[in-house]
Image (cartoon, rainbow, N blue to C red; front, side, top):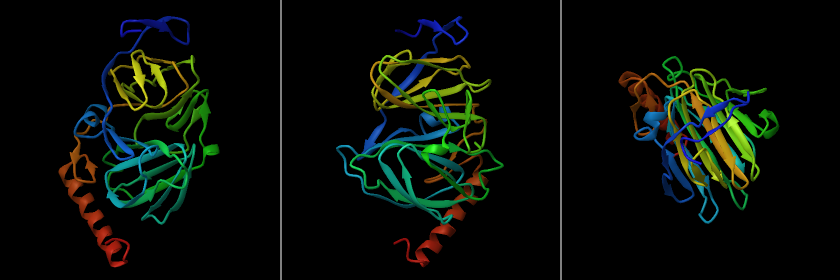
Length: 286
């Protein structure tokens, strides 16, 4: 199948396939592969600014020490295994297979964790840019167990709304983020909501066509459009999919922070430095 093929929409009408305009396997460091960052694809896909795929199979796991963020929110979904977490909002615990963590850093937070006690841990961590009204707000953390995440067919709704399912987490701007599992040979069509022209998909396991062939470990960027996206699984497949109204603000980048203005970036970085000093005084940081 190529970019000019057509398929049937849910209404039964013929619809043009949405083109893949960029694809990448990212850069791997141990068990973590960075597929997107704000200095590359995150600029095209904002509010989605970072995407990490982690897979401890064949790589050492280890702990992820406390580290800071401001101006963004992270969504961590676990497809296999489990991870531990802690953050400076006072939360600590474990995210199980099928569960997720929402960490809205706002004006500053430190968090960390480890790859748990499973033989293999696999999943994604997505970072989204916050709008001006939230980028310096209070930090917030939400942890959902698998039974708290609604599904519509093969799609678990992590953020936003799809079909009959919706997320318990209130997204900071219009966006959908889905975790999808398809059996070999299955076909599934995603129709984004009106005005959500940004779209991408990243495969964790298996292979599929969308309409181009995509393998485990790849991220595909789709052309900006509100057209649907057709997926055909060649093997049992797990992937995540994001769509959104494009973030209208420039990305102001710090080492751990992403903000909408230089002034907001300075304030966010000052706040996380202040939290870091407190952590060092408490003996929690070296």
